[in-house]
Amino acid sequence: MSTYIIILVIIGLAALGMAWMPSISRKIKISYSVIYVILGILLYLAFGRLLPLPDPLSKNTMTLHLTELVVIVSLMGSGLKIDQPFSLRQWAVPLRLVSVTLVLSIAIVAALAMWVLHFDLASALLLGAVLAPTDPVLAADVQVGPPLEEARDNVKFALTAEAGMNDGTAFPFVWLAIALAAHATPSEVLPAWLWGDLLYKVVAGIVSGFLLGRLLAYLVFRLPEQKKYIVTKDGFVAISATLLVYGLTEMIHGYGFFAVFVAAVTLRNYEMHHKYHRKLHAFTDQIERILVAIVLLLFGGSLVSGVLDKLSWQMAVLGVVFVLFIRPLTALIGLAGSPLHIKEKLATGFFGIKGMGSFFYLAFALHEKRFRLDEELWATGAFVVLLSIIIHGLTATSVMEQLDTEFAEKIELQEGVVAAPEK
Image (cartoon, one colour):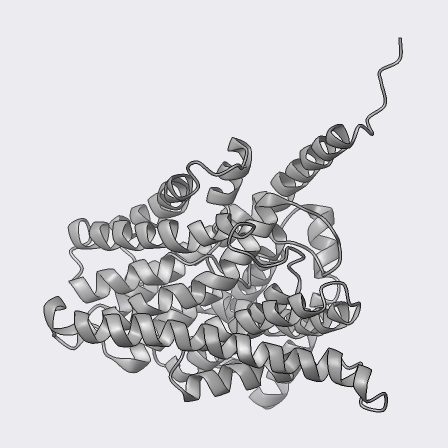
């Protein structure tokens, strides 16, 4: 039997299983990411010789493009499902997370990597940039639901918007690490980095996303009103828009991650209550889950194929400290003075889930430049993602249900709906 046929069967089964995974996860209160990683481990333990080697270092190009695709599809879906109209005031919480919290996380991880792990500056900075962003892909259990739910959950909104924005926000720091890996000193690279990788690429990504989002909104919503015979009802328009916006923005050397999310939010805000958003989001969600199933199986396989071989106990301790302390504490600092309840701040800080974005950044950086500690970087990154999948995957559903219950009770009290107790 050919390897190709076996792969087709595995992908088919994995994709089919994803059709039931959301409901199963809610029932057993365990994220499907945990289940698929375990399945990947068992699959490669049983049939590893018949399957492609899931080594992110030797298969760097495949890792890069597969994770890139799943992240941009997830970014489009994240932007489409946010019911909160964009404004600096209403989005103040996620904006704090992608500025104060993200930068603090990168700085602290980089400093600890140099001090405790004895990483060079370039590798330490890359590790910080890789670990800091909240993942838009594996965080579905702690994000808002489909469009038009009209729910106002502060934690889910903050985590969804943060995940949509911070992949692009971390990119300048990845480029800075790449520049430093070329044996340049910080003073040599900072001017070009500030004007190019930080200012131009961020602005280009935001502007490109906004303009293309407005154009898409016109084609999807306004043009059918003017020309009744030019109407589309297909959900795959969202995927087409994702690829188009990402590709065009990368062609002008802007950050495509920023552009895709901004385009999605722009499209959503153009006709906030249009039911077509549900179909657009549903299609991106289905494609995303198929891609995620494949990546999680490969990640499970990589765990038994040597990706953690270079993991030292110091790296493992840094990973645990990052997930349990650094991310929550930096989130509390970033959210200081915000109107969120302390429970909401703690939940927002704790559920900074790591995943596909971290894999993409590692693959991207190592594709651009060889780092002295590439194996150690992958070992640490993979361990943190695994730790996040286990800890957050086992707790997200239960914690979010509890917060949802408290949130609903608070809304009922505010609206005077709660019935008076019986005498």
